[in-house]
View 1 (tube, rainbow, N blue to C red):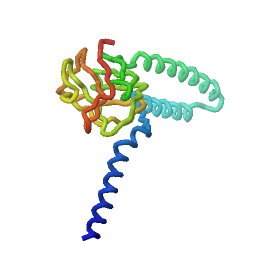
View 2: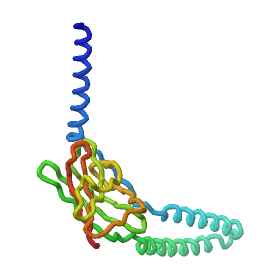
View 3: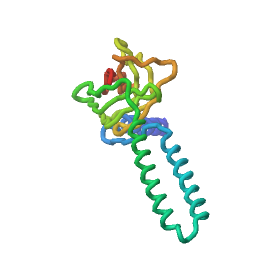
Length: 200
């Protein structure tokens, strides 16, 4: 009987230690996750680069040694002009957020800062320069105006309490001005911070 009690007590201690670690360890550990903005420009640029290299090889094979230097100089000018044009196109194609807001902490114990932006075409909420108090079971919620955070729409588990991160918006959800992006602890129904979305 005593042996069973010892085994039960030992199991209880291990369980308490595990639960304590799960609850308290996030308070002392930061997790940084940096994600790039989702775009097809990288694949497009790669395809253009491969096409340019192929054209250069064909031109070099066709040229004679007498005019090779002149042609290479001409190609260099063309490539420089193409690079400048590509840079201008990339600047023009920078995505514009439809709605945005600054994160604010819920209270003195729960802090949050950074920017939340909604990109309608990409269907994402992007959090940039984000930093928040870490904790257990944290999720990103989208909460409609006047809605209780616990009843909000989950966009997924918080990837990290620091960094730049993307969260997909379900197709059947309409994001509107006044909606909030909330950092929510599901285990204890506690708000860590939020950002109200307004027209950019």
